[in-house]
Length: 206
Image (cartoon, rainbow, N blue to C red; front, side, top):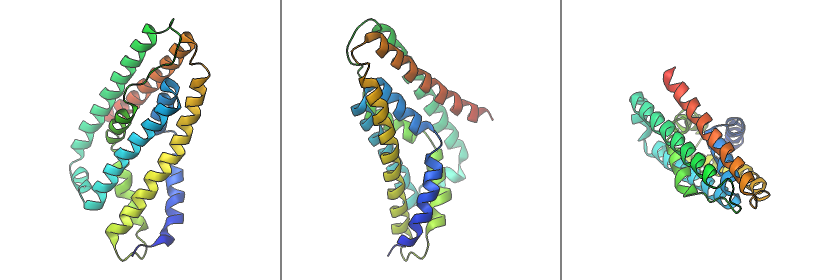
């Protein structure tokens, strides 16, 4: 059996963790601005998939490897920064190519991008490691309790960030007929990618 009574406190902690803008939120907003509502939904589903992978890793105990070998997390962070910079380059190239062309701005593989961005953010697994065990309550089945907590966490982020991404996509839809406006949105998305990469690199150097 699981302990449902532990959920209110856990949900409060999750909200405190999710409300400040982080890589996942910024990425979904960038994709929404770049590709619209549908792309934003696909992006947050990709991020949710990545979170499920990390939650599952915690449940089965694989995450202990990351805790005992922190150098692996540095490699993951470096890969994430490189990937974000590549996204910025591709987005800028697309903006320059279509600055004078009206029409919608396509977004390539937002789901797969979301999965990659999520999996390249080791803070997610560190959060699971640090917080989930604190809300075991009186659960008779620790693994089932961890699975419940992980599922609640993923669902909350998908709903919250998905809503924010859809709102950003609605903003994009107003400008989809203007090639120049679409280019501006692409430049904004690229700036977000560069900012995120800069944050990751700063963490690596400290």
